[in-house]
Structure formats: C-alpha cells, structure tokens
Image (tube, rainbow, N blue to C red; front, side, top):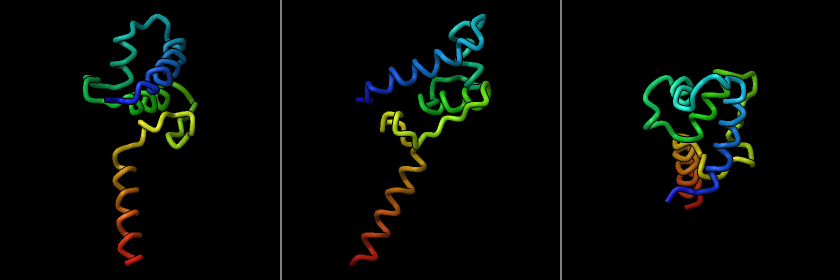
Length: 91
C-alpha cells in the first residue's frame, strides 16, 4: 500500500501551482505538467516537474517535509548499492 501521507503533501503543492493558473481545469494542469499521459508518472515527479516548469521555486526532494515515500527509485538504488559496498568492505 502506498503511504497515505503523500496525499496531503501532493494536494498542497498542486493547489499552489493551480492558483497560478486558475483558468485551467485540473486535468489540463496535470497534463501540462506531465507533458504526456500522466498515468505512469509518480506523484513526486509530477510536483517537481510542475514547480520546475511553472515557478521559480525549486522543490528539494531531500526536504524532510516530503513523506519518505518520495525517494527517487534511482536514488534508492544508489543508496542500496552504497550499503552493499560498505558491507563488502567490512567483511
């Protein structure tokens, strides 16, 4: 199950973006952010892309206010690999 804490964070960030373009429909906002069918885009990617495209504000995904659900899969792989290499060095 996905972490439900993500919902409040995503909706808060999405609301701030939508307030900049109040004439857009919700689907239009989401599509404009994603630039493609948004079905496969992760929540944190949608928000970081939206802020990157439509504001001067950057979202730091290492920010502690972001639920831990939002760890980028590539960053997670890097972290796991670093643990493996540390473990191997210890042996």
